[in-house]
Each structure stands twice: as structure tokens, then as C-alpha cells.
Image (cartoon, rainbow over all chains, first blue to last red; front, side, top):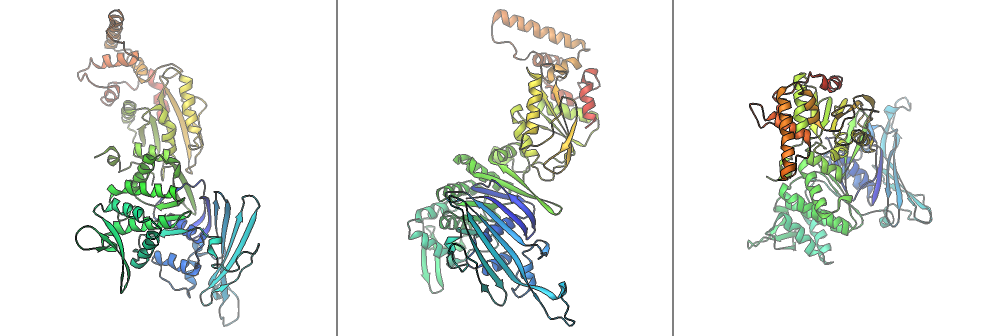
Length: 364
Length: 220
């Protein structure tokens, strides 16, 4: 489980350190305070098997649809678009095999043509990123591995400096250095085929009942789930007892959201599930039951949750669910307050949240 | 509507001066005092139980955009005035609160905070000057000139004597509370508690017994 996270010069965060993370972490703060950036940093630290696709996706999920041949694509990851300061993302992971991971991202620049041949800021542009991932294992014998990758818009070059005979290629054996991670972004609708595949993978290993029980939180009429192979791909259907199976994706935003969450949880054993806009699409009356399911599953499968929300009702529901289960030690909340150039991280324990709710005090 | 649903609209501390008091009666009393001083820059909130102070302060110092620059915590001395003061100071200096704690009651101390602003903090232990008791003991002192008060006190004394002889039931646990309620029962609106009575102008905030509190509140 990740216990601490440090971010330097990434997106809109100049420097942030979060310590003593819990199993379930609620991320709070005003718009543009950095909640999503925390999730993006964790996503890159996993690291993704295909970093270029991951970087593209991170921008796309924000609606920043810009091509990789633009310097702005690369510069957008740097704080204040200042490429002279490297991005540093670092996690400390505790557990049976504790380790730290640090991802340093440097801009790769190229001198463009200049009429008078001078080198200046104006004729240099970012053409890619140099990613250096260092993992140090601290349990028993101290080992570390270092992986490097250069991403360039016209030519993806992979190279590495490896120690201890570790993989010489970033994505060759991600299991060596990755933790499973799922990033649920509210703006992106679940892809029918992808969800059907995830469902089938779990169904074949006997996890069907868990998925159905989770889905029944929001749709009690749901009798069964079935994947049907169609000419256009695999589709997950639900049986509401109406005589006609209905594609889950047509049942409503809340249903697809719960499906995405439960599939992510069950597929992320020992990993991280990040939920952006946790309240989105869900009626308040299902929130407590949903979060009980999330909290129980997270404990059982050793999953760590990072959920961003603006909703007081949602925070209350998460707290109520955790308290009812007696898992209060699992819960932490963090609010990111922007004060000028700096970001203040304000942490809440479950006890503090309880006091806040009892007094009706603002905590978001 | 359940209790939890009823509190889905949170409130914020939005004034630069904050008075934290024990309960609803104390809140009404200090609100009345501030009204009498025409002070609109001060917010009064109850801690709803003395043992809740640390937890409340932990959440208050974490409030987004907290504007508080001056804080007074007022609580009853009960049977241990020093213990009451020390308990408040311990809550203030708890690592999750991190506020400056004064060296003695009715003095301000100024210091940095985790929310980025400097703050002035003071503690009032009622009924002042290391006396045991609560708000009602102070109210007895503030109403000492009223002839009805001595009658109310006499009535409670007689009642206690009668209860002792007849042993119908236990006498009032806190004498000053019984005396103040008997005194308030002599007014036209006989069912007011000391807080409501304050809002309706019963207590004389200019009384010399109240002067130290008046002074520290004016200095906030």
C-alpha cells in the first residue's frame, strides 16, 4: 500500500507531499486544486506499459486534444509549462516488500532551424520526454533498478541502463515494477467491449456473484448478467425480468459507473483504483451501500482507493459506510488548498470527519 | 429526514473573531453580549461538550479559507478551575491543532498557525479568578443587587432543607443553576433559560463582576 507520495513540478502542482495515506483516500479541494493531478501522478508511477499512450490519455481525459507533434503536448505536463525544472514523482510503498519508486521526467529539446544560427529559447522546442524510473527495495537486502525511456513524437526510442540484470526494456516485463492500477474518469464513458472483457475475465474465475451483488446496489431488479458475442463485438447485458435483455451501458450512468468501479476493484488485486468525481451519476441513497462494497472489497483484495469528490454528501456516505464496517483506520481525506504558488495539504482522519459532520462544518 | 441528511449543507466560520463556548446556553449568552457591544465581526459556536474541544479545534483549523485572527475559548471551571484551563491549553497545543496557548486565563497570546495566519488566543474560565463553578455562578454575582435574587436563593435553600428532611428525592445537583432558574422564574416570561434571558436583556453586562470578560472580548 502506498504510504506517501511526493510530487514536484507536475501539472499545476509545484510541490506536494502527502504522508500516512490510508486504504481509502478521499481527495478534496476547489477546482484546479490538484486532485486529478494526484491521480495522474500515481497513474504514471505504476508505470503504464505504454507511457506515450498513457500521456495521450491523460490529456484527452482533460479534453486537451492536442497532437504529440506539438511542443505544447509535452510541455503541458510541467508546472507552469516550465520545462527547465524536472518533474519528480515519488511513492513509498509499505507491505511485505517495501520499496520506493521515483519517476523523473525531463524534457527533450531540439534546436530548430534558425536563420542566423543562434541558439536561444525561441528556436528550441520540446520534442519528447526522458523518463527515468528508479525503484529501491528496502526489505532485507537493498536492491534497486533503474529504467529509462525516451519518448519522442516522431520516434519512440527505448533504451535503458539496467542493474541486477533487470529488464532492459520499459514494457517488456511490467510486472517487475508495476502495480495494477485503474483510473476511472467520469468524462469517459465505459467502453462496451472493454467492460464485457473485464466482466468475462472475472466470470471465468468465479467472481460473477460479487459483480451481480454490487450491481444490485443500484438496480435491485437485476437478476443476471450475461455477455453476448455480437457481430459488432461483445456486449454485457442485464436481465431485469422484463422479457428482454438490456445492454448495461443503456441502463443509466449510475449503473455503468458501479459496473466500472466493481470491475476495476476485482481486477486490481494488490493495486490502486482511482475514482474521479466519485459522486457522479449516483443517487445519494445508494452511496453508503456502494462504499460499503468498495471498502470491504478493498480490504479483501488489498486494493487502495483514491477518490476525488466535491460532494459533502458523498464524503458523508463514505464515512458512514466505513464507520458502519468498523474500518475507520482505513479512511483518510486530504484537501488541497492553493495558496499563491504553493499547495497546502490538509489531512483528515475518520475521527475528524466525524466531528466535522456532527458540527456540520465545511471540510471540502 | 434523518439526522445525517439534515446536515448536508455545511456551515463555515466566516468571521475574523471566533468565540468557542460550551453549549447552547453559553452561545446565546455570548451572542447577547456581542449584540450589546454591536459587534458583528465575531462568531460564537458551541463545542457541545467540554471533551469535544480538541476534536472541534482539529476540524476548525482545517477549514478551507479560515479567516480567524482572534480566538477566545470560554468554559466552566466546574470543580477544578486550573484543570479546566489546562485542559483547554492542552487542546490548543495538540499536534493536530497547533494553536498558541496562553500562560493564564484572560490573557492573549499570539502565534503562528498551520493555516498560514497569525492568531491571538485567550481562554476564559467561568466564573473567573480561579473560583469553582459555572456560568450561573457568574450570573449570581452579576444579579446580586436585585432583591428578587435573595428571595430566589432563600427559596432554594428552604427547598433543599425540606428535601433533606423528607427525602422525597435528591436535591438539585448544582446549587447555582437552581438559584438562577428560581430567579428567572420571577420574571414576566417565567420559563427562560439563562441564555434566552441574556438575549432578552436580563443580565447587566456592565456589572463590575463581568468586567474582565467584557474587557477581553473587547480586546479580541
